[in-house]
Amino acid sequence: MRSIPPSMDPVVVATIDDRLDAVADRERVAIPWAIESGSRAWGFPSPDSDYDCRFVYVRTAEAYLDPWPRRDVIETPLDAVLDVNGWDLVKTVRLLVKGNATLVEWLASPIVYRGDGVFRDELLVLAQDVVDRAGLVRHYAHVGSAQHAGWADGGRGLKKAFYALRPAAVLRWLRVQPGAAPPMDLRTLLVQGEASDALREAVDELVALKAVTREMGPGAVPEVISRFVADELERARAGGGSSGPLAESRDRREARERAAEFFRSAVERYAPVRTVGA
Image (cartoon, rainbow, N blue to C red; front, side):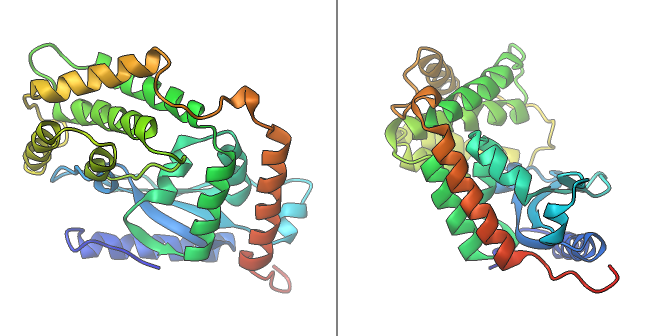
């Protein structure tokens, strides 16, 4: 599967495709999931936003039996435009069981460079089964609070505003919706989170402003947005962010068994065949 919006620079997209091909060839891995993360996937890019490609890769079955395993991340050179790196399937399933919010976001990205729909869907099902919603609430409350604290009085930068607004929108979604895989797009979060019309209209205007403002540019944040962020962060801190089960009440062993079962199945289906002499 592939989903690239027409607003993305085709030259940059082609460069990302080339990098993914080079990684697969050089590292002898399969890449069943590669997506865009960051502000473009969140729905509020600036004209100078970089491209943040993230991917999950699978090594050969023999590599997972090696007593000296390789690193569980693959990184490519970082520059002003491209940030392309990925996680090994081992790291992916381990972090998913721990409730890693970043991975959950990757699975929900609306921008897909390449991907196997079955692989994504099965990981989403696993996430719904094993991810601790209370852990997600703690994550987004921490991230949102850190960004909210960084707003400068009277001249709040748009980037920090959005980086606090989106965690607040996720917290709202987790409070009113079931499941553990919130959508990635900010506007979708607000609609599904049953945010007020006034808030959604203010966000739409701010998104339009950011679309013509440099990444670190300033901009006034409407009071309705500031109040929404503060209220959702305070509600989460007070313990009202999610009705999901706490991590302590979950059967961690069962979660690990489910994840291990998925891992073995995915290696069997996606691992590249080792060539003679490789």
